[in-house]
Image (cartoon, rainbow, N blue to C red):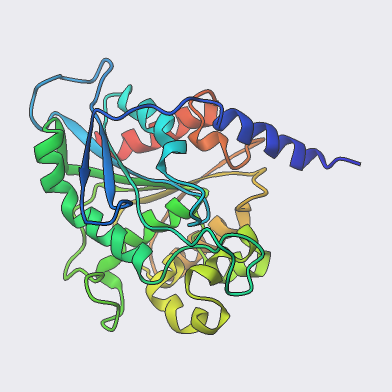
Length: 298
């Protein structure tokens, strides 16, 4: 007998992935590796002021896909375009992901690379103000909001917490002061690695990202957003209650960890919504995401 939740998730995924990729207005490299790329989308719509320097908030998008190689930034280009059509300047960041070949006792493509996945996100965020000034002058880096979906939600939360990383974090990760962000909107993020592993989220992707079970405990303090609190940066989480990919419990654990650290994280729970509508321009949930971004950016 077919599970209705699985059927719904498959239908939502099919809708989110049905949109053709949207080509960027400009592209820039932040490193020498082919995956060290940022695509820029110029603001358009009623709020856009074409040609006017620093006229639009900059929204940085970090895609999901369990940090695995088969999933790249192309699947969120319709989402990036959706935000651009609402007047935002958008930067869609690519980063190095896991191997396409199984290893570490994984049944499929392994999640992430240690430390390269984190190296890339840190380098991209550090380079973005200069890259945007050159390729998309309408973008205002002083009004930057990070957003990311699923594994990308994890990376967005991590990037906003670099100033609270342990002092023995790998070189280039830790910042001496908070990054200049208006805030973070994390979409169904893998935000608490302990809970994610307990629930088997994405086939144990969190442990794979950290190099397998042997590296999990030692590396988690440098990688798990739930261990990097408080950040002092405005943070909102948007989560579908019907999400079977990254269940609601993961977001709730992160919000609870923030509260224990003395920080309030906004949590918007959407009834009847699964994992993929949050990045699907055809879904009402995507408009909710845009509104959350607007509240921080404008």
